[in-house]
Image 1 (tube, rainbow, N blue to C red):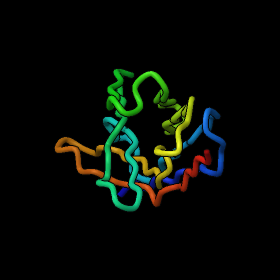
Image 2: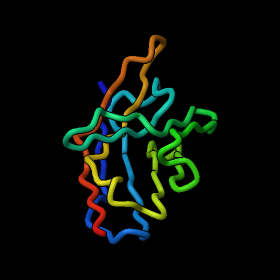
Image 3: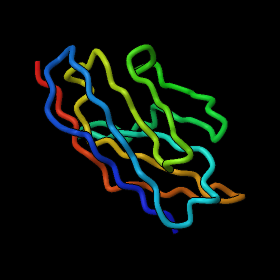
Length: 117
């Protein structure tokens, strides 16, 4: 079992920045890749950023060049630096962790990000 707790969400103006954190606890020794997804009303849930245990990253086109994912394995924490925020970035943001040999996925409870125009 892995528990993931997101923090850092809030209200920000368009063009601003926000930094999210996701701390993992529990059976953390078997965590593999970690990442972020988001969901807003009327939209499908979007997985937009991933980072491997070795630090390799991958981004969706919707956030590439604006968001940066990173992780601190010693602290069991993944981060999301969000820059040049747009109103369409408004969503609940969730982090995930792939666990074990077959990558069972654990998800956090989410944190709300609201971007005003």
